[in-house]
Image 1 (cartoon, rainbow, N blue to C red):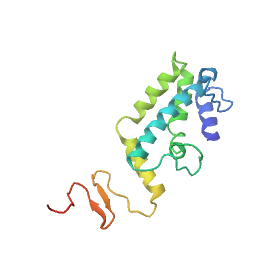
Image 2: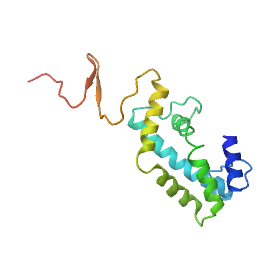
Image 3: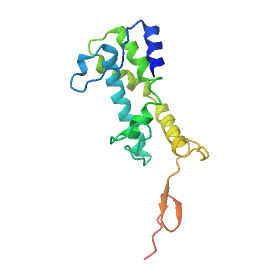
Image 4: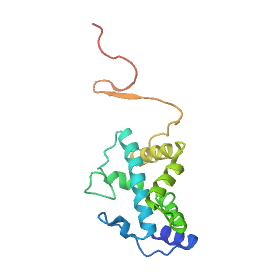
Length: 162
């Protein structure tokens, strides 16, 4: 991460000292830190949604621990160097009036189209199920767990006929 910060500071000419986040005074930080805080918060929301949709526990962290969103932070960290860090430095160089709002909109625009959601799903599945053969994301297969039968296809009534 430090290298990503340094490289983006050099690329944009924006001064960088360190990541500084104070939940009680976000606007007291420099522009890069304000943009990072807003963009990262938005990224956490998207990643959290993906994890819940996959049935994962957001609090089951591997790197981050002790928080109800530890796994969210772990997964989001996979994308910050490509998404939120360059975005924050680009915006800080432009010095918009409301950098937090611009950061949220810019991240939304970068995630638009669904490609990020597919990537995040593949990455989480690879992290948790590394030996599983990768499924074709264009297939919409829903399986359910039946305690006596194991995995069964969704969309069918498996109850006994009355």
